[in-house]
Amino acid sequence: MGSPPIPMNRIATAANVPRKFLELILADLREAGFLHSHRGKMGGYCLSRPTHLISLGEIIRVIEGPLALVPCVSRTAYRACADCKSEADCAIRHAMMRVRDETARILDGTSLADANTEDLAAA
Image (cartoon, rainbow, N blue to C red; front, side, top):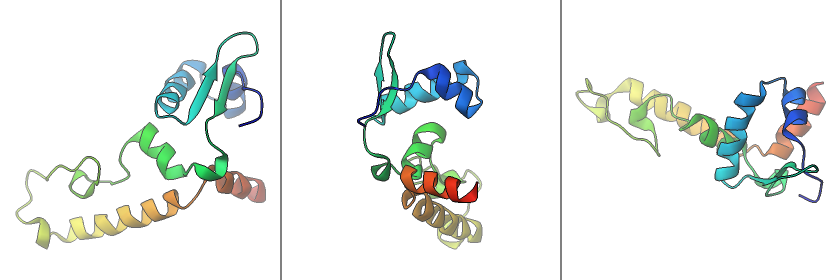
């Protein structure tokens, strides 16, 4: 936002990822509305919102899918376990719900700006 678009080759080099792999990720993020792409000699990608308004949870859901480790606790892709006799009594399901909730709390509460600040502090 406000800065010139960053070319894909520069992003790939900085992130040390193959260009083809990066193309898929950037396409998903663009379709989800996190990025704008610009064509041409001065083209590239830029964020559609400020970094403090984009959470890591949002990004991970776009790239990786639901945060839940098992489908029976997913909020967006729920699916009952085939061999489960009782979801209400399943200790594993209850534990996985807590994992899902805490994971979502941390990732949804961490913005790209926060993550960048933490990276700088760790370096």
